[in-house]
Amino acid sequence: MFKAALRSARPAVLAARANLKPTNSAALRALSTSAIRRSDEHHASAPAIYGVGGKEGEVPTDEAQSTGLDRVQTLGLLEGIEVFDLNPLDASRIGTLADPIKVFSVEPERLVGCTGSPVDSHDLLWLTLTKDKMRRCPECGSVYALDQDNSSPVVQDHVH
Image 1 (cartoon, rainbow, N blue to C red):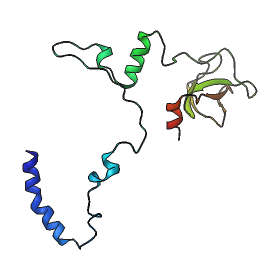
Image 2 (image 1 turned 90 degrees about the vertical axis):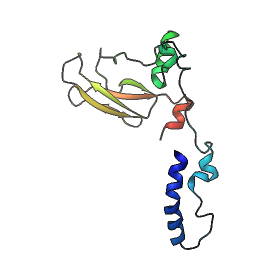
Image 3 (image 1 turned 135 degrees about the horizontal axis):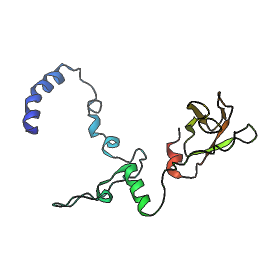
Image 4 (image 1 turned 30 degrees about the vertical axis):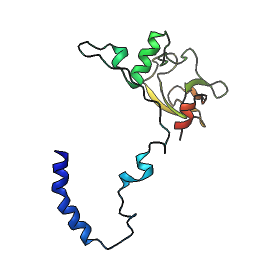
């Protein structure tokens, strides 16, 4: 079927090529045939994270069929490691400029929600923290600072 589609498109391609001015043959070469296009070594990529898949006639398990971050979390739970820190921030005090509430991040920017101190003393307000600037909640005055960790080589490659 693919060959038939190519055969039907060939007369149109030949007619279009005949209308072109003669140029260097290298300029007419398709991008898909160039060396850099054919090789996948021209950029760094994260390792593929996927399972072995389900065997024929069996229902696959989560370990066998999960992919991406779901697989990382599943494998972490099997080893007793909490991959994603879902614990709330320290709400026992109000952060100050001298002693801000530290928010861990592996990225240079993180979104933080403040509900006040004591907890739920005001509506949820979202603040964007960056590695260069602390943010103060306009409602309660609590100060938050980003505690960035760049030790992971994968994170260093993806930080812009």
